[in-house]
Length: 148
Image (cartoon, rainbow, N blue to C red; front, side, top):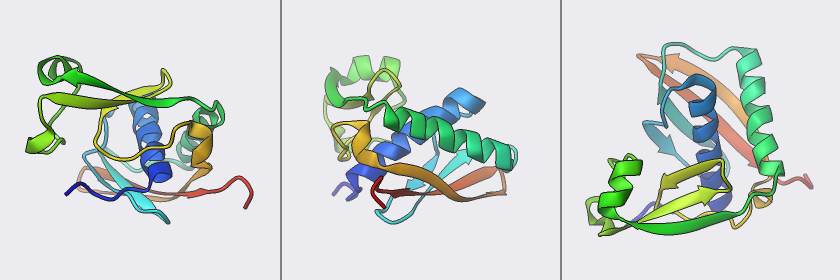
């Protein structure tokens, strides 16, 4: 049974992943635990983030959210998806058609989880804390509604 991700938090995870890739060329996360109140995501990395980097990540993620980008899906044959994307995190029973979640032209990633229909639904992204140990950078993040 697939994990029961919160659509807003899960979509924010995708945006955070792409932001980390663009800022640090570190690749997408190696592990994620996504929940409604607070989530964490781990990257192979060589150090902890600085306060300035944390602030820049928050700013970039929130700029993408504010663009009100459409979040949609497309399906690709497994062979075509394997040429464009890393499929190693997908369960073995993912089938011959792979679902790709697209967040505007900012991110595209194979995924089976639920997502928002537009980034504006996500709310405001903030990093609660970061830590570094044994080659893994952990980022803990939260979302709040714009009306809070």
